[in-house]
Image: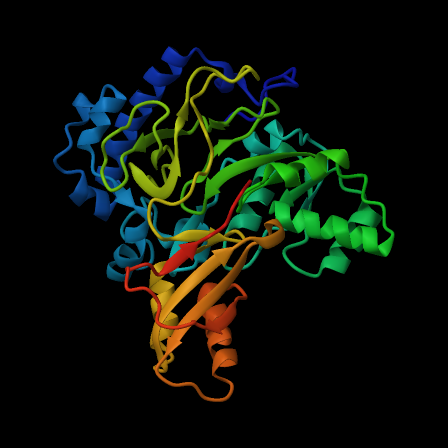
Length: 418
């Protein structure tokens, strides 16, 4: 992959971003045909699911509706049937550089290629440049977020401080000592670090640019960062696909990555919806090692009309607008209804459970409401330990006020982003 033109364009990452839309579309469709052929020949799962697809007839996005959607929600079952990656990889495990585990559990590979997750493009759009020191607060264990950002920063020519999550006072100390120009992590954690710095009387004004992901960025929080002189932009990425889309300084939606084809379809189907209509994000990646074809993310978004004022000509989406199913993302981690069921089954005292997600003060919180058959001393604490073990997140456990509604809802996302 080409990372920078020479001499460098200070506005755009490479020439791919400013291609004429019709040229990009023709090149993308050609690449998709090649990818479908490759996936069918090299992977067990796609050899079966794509055996009826006439590759020669895939000329337009409308033609892609004949290709079945593989949904993220199906990965747990697929991987249980065929370890470790559900028969979806085109390279053996021995050729992978790393393997990660996301809640579910779902296992994700990382091949030995520079910028495997393609995050350098989003970092560049966020104003991060070669030679910058990047303070990376995404997790480095189990999930790939920390590695995703580090590999992109490395490809861009940055130096990375692998801070990881937690230990707020140590985070403040490191930033005050090393004076990084850039931050990557969740927006809420950046806010926590800055507030802790204020309490400690430390000056963290070296941070000028930030690329955030993993949770929503409310306008009020973005405004607080701006008053501190920090430009904060968002990336939309998943552990399966890598970068999908990213914000630019124009702040008008998210521009799709150049190495994926993004569709918006009617939830539960593979049928494309009209421009502006909210639907499920379905992505075909050009990754040869993990060639996901029409991968249904379960996320909701919509296509924005026209071209971004920043000069990038690729399709834009509105960003993350919620989930097409009950799976939700909390503090950068996906939580699935199956996990709530796992927690309840480990404690026979629970008759019914519902995970309620809220964001008072724009910080994600989760509470497991339980309807109990009976209670005993220490039960709530034991369930809280199980919640953390299963979801990798801390959460409260509380007794429901009466029976929970019999409406089939397992995760109740009550967050507001006003």
